[in-house]
Image 1 (tube, helix red, strand yellow):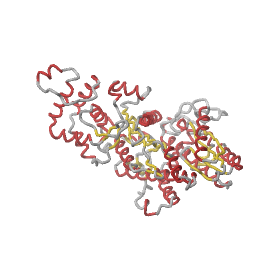
Image 2 (cartoon, helix red, strand yellow):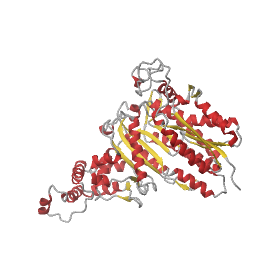
Image 3 (cartoon, one colour):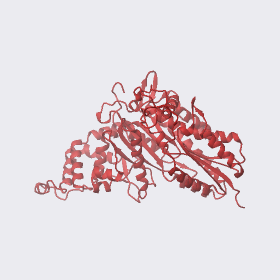
Image 4 (tube, helix red, strand yellow):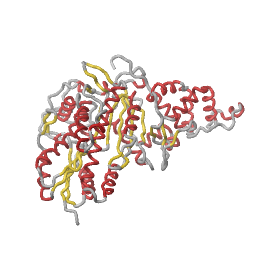
Length: 555
């Protein structure tokens, strides 16, 4: 029996980074991200109230919603969505017009098969995005005589010049709206995620004691209003005032959704399978964020200021299969390992799910959009490698100043390490079979002769030597003959190990167990002390692997 036709409508925000990451002011960023997510939820609420024939919300993400109904009701569904986007709405007591903050595209199709409809909507969305404005059109009826003090290109057409970062200058209506929303939700945004998890788990039919008995309470916490506060002060100068920007993107989640629908083999309605996939993913994100807040508080990423307990976390993007987090640099790798460990057995509807992640360590003064873009490029580069989507890999970048890469990622690595070493620099993954004790890792790092390793790595980069094999000859005459050549490096490494004795050997063995390195087309493998890149990673991540908690006043 042929499936009946249904009308499918997709509303999605496009180019929305321009309206979320256009300033470094955290409340503005938070407000934009939260508002966008709530807009999609409010649209779903409006449509549900309309009681259109055969109406269903198929999927709801952080910036996208797909809805369906009888074909004869599609014009009404479309009218409701477009009317909402062009009318004033209210989020956390702040009134605004969605189309004045973000750029949306709305597309609809008639189809008898959801998977076909989804592909058509994706194609239409890409076509319309290419012809859409990079930013929501501003109000041209303004008497503003200057640009917004925070984003630099919208008209300064609000009456707000009290934002600290704007230095007593006026900001745009868009920035002001997002700032007010961001300030309003600062103290309860993650608490709301926790509470949402309760209702969503109930919708999935999960019993109370299966997931919620151990869900931590996080209602007492607030979150930073600026990146300087989030970064904090640290007694180690190399990480003082630095943040870690972590971007993670699911691998082939669209394919996993299709597979889940195909696996149902007609026994379940495809829309029902999509809804279960969507709801399960939203629950997992809410649960993870709740556990992350608790994890950070337990690890000391917490300050007390003006009677508030402030957890040092900002979530720039959450929803769907993407997430962007900002935490202090000193706890960045711990957060990334916690994220990987939490999702190690992640599956939905029988589909195993993995992710690709980029982490960028940088000054809190680095434009947040540039840092997020660099983290995103790291994650995207992993996906492009053969086998890069099979497991949850990550890559990192350490920016020592407020400068950021302006060339392609490949060119950046070549500039940093030379063509041969750059070619063999592959993504990493945490070895979750190894239990990491912070104090032990710190002690192992302390045992390393850092200056000796620096000289070894510097010479290896100079000679573009990717392998430091065991030396064939160790006599004095051979050493003199090889001095200054690439052949000298294995012997230099050997002497470095001998000088460090058993403590250094043990430290290296333990440190080599922290990460696994990708082998394209194969499973990840452990490092060897013959790998130049092992020494390079240890050197670059030395300050981030196990730093002490901050002790400085004013943090």
